[in-house]
Image 1 (cartoon, rainbow, N blue to C red):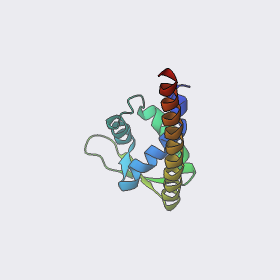
Image 2: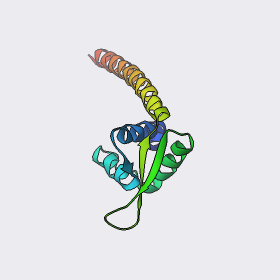
Image 3: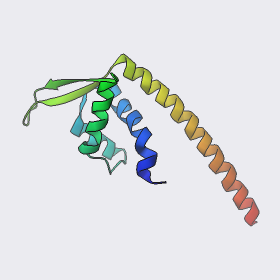
Image 4: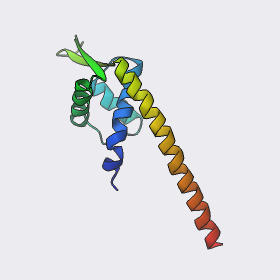
Length: 115
């Protein structure tokens, strides 16, 4: 399974989490993801996701003046987006726990078999 396949559903939740605390524009989202270790995601990857999330009414956007060039589109979470983020966090926590349980159990079993 490729990293891209694994990231497909996770990226939405990460974007919602970043947008939650303050309004953010697209390039800033790409930079923030990069700071967290997501090096392979460009604005070109992010904008279609933002457009879909906007259509689903998870986020809204506002054009604001920029100090450097044209206006920027800033994204913020809606109430529905907040709810979706909470659902994502619950699903992520459960999935993370389940995967860790499998890996920890199977790794320890594998090591016991080698001894």
